[in-house]
Every structure is written in structure tokens, then in C-alpha cells.
Length: 301
Image (spheres, rainbow, N blue to C red):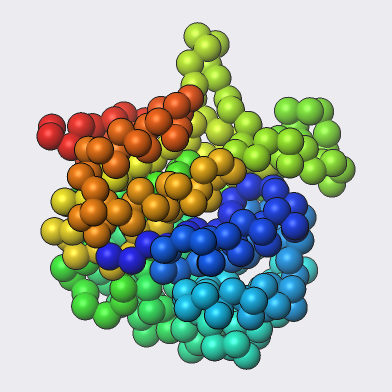
């Protein structure tokens, strides 16, 4: 299995995002880097030409570079930006991650990844996606491993990627929740999401951690973590594991996953070290086991 670093889902600013992917490219053993804005077009600090420039800087690392695109394309301006990114991907010969079905029509025929926001729930959908140029499918995050296995055994064409670590990207909305929390309209959000490098926590009236708000995106409060489930993922013959960026200790997190994958570290030891790196975070893997998403199911259960 290969390790992919997913697109940054948070508002870190242009410089920080560039620096992050430079580190991921040249200081980690990750195999694949997804770069580009998925959540909000207002946060697309790297326009098509700048995205291509960053890709050219990262390609000497030997890693596969893939351009990620918006999960919710809502107007002609966003469609135009997607067309420009698709054109740059063709020019450089890199793949394009499409997260909105409208993008399939724009990029049809060029190598694509169907992102986790495409509703790929059966083998027939995978077969259709393969016909329009999809080379890899990132399975939806809420699927249980039994459902993933059914999809994978029903087709032999594209590679299969599983979201394995990070805050779960659950939904998008036309409304910006972060701006609303500060009584601001979306048109004048003042980029408040930038104040929360790993999203803004939402707690219940009982003061329990519930969700994470990230601009127009709703995410899990807990970190989704399939490290303890590597034996199942190996048995399923998954091709790629996606680690979603977080603001702290990402190189160390990638190193732990790589060592566990290569057998250089026992899985339970790697999990314990991962807990130490995320001392203030709770893990979950419920969806993978067909249970409520916020639950943690022990690997021995």
C-alpha cells in the first residue's frame, strides 16, 4: 500500500501550504501528494498557474503529484477555475482529483481520481467512472470495510484509495458556518476560518465534543484513524491510504504510518505513539466497522 497526503482542508494561507507540501515532498516517505483547494473557492490562494508552479517544484521528489478540486462547484467562476486547473494538469501530465460530478465532464478523457465526495457506492459506478478516465477511486468515508470489499471485488480497473487518518470530511454547504458563528455574511467572512488551523470545534449542550466546523464544511470532531485496522486493509488489497493534513506533527505521523506499513514497527506500538502525538485528541473508526462514526472499535473486537 502507498501513502498519500491528501489536500489541505483548512485555511493556512498560501505560504504555509507551500511550505507544508515542500516538507511532505522532501522530508517524508509519502508516495503521493494531493495539492489544491477542495473546501472553499475564496480560499483558493494557489490559482491554476501557481498550482502548476508548485507541482513543478515538488516533482523532483519522485512523488506523484495530483491536483485536487472543489467538492462543491456552485457558479461559473468556479467552473472556469476548474477548467484552468484541468488544463494545467493536462499540460504537466499529472492526474486531477475531481470531487464534484460536474468536473467529470470538464476533465473527461484525462487521468482522474474520483475523490471521496463522489458517491461511489457500487461496482457499477466504478465501472462508469473508469470509462470517463478515472484511474483511482477514493471510497466514501462513511463506508464499512464490508461494503468497500464488495465494491472492490466487483471491479478490477481503477486503483482503490481509502481515507485512513484525519478529521472526516462529512458534508458541504452553500452557507459558511464559521462566518455565521461570528455573525458575518459569507461575502464578508474576513477569513475567520484561518483562526482555526484544524477547524473550529462544536460542542453539545452537555459540553461533549460533537463536530468540527471548517468554513462551508462539516467534519468529525474526532480523528479518524485506521492504523489499528491495517491487517483488514491489507487483506482487502487496498492500493493507497490517505492521510489528511493536520497542523501539528504531520511528518512524524507519516513516519509512524510508513514504519507500521513496512513492518518496521509493531502496529500497537505505532498506535500508542500516534496517541502520544495527539494527546488532546480522541480517535474514531466506527464507520469502517459498520458502527456509528464517532465510535472507536478496538482492533481485537
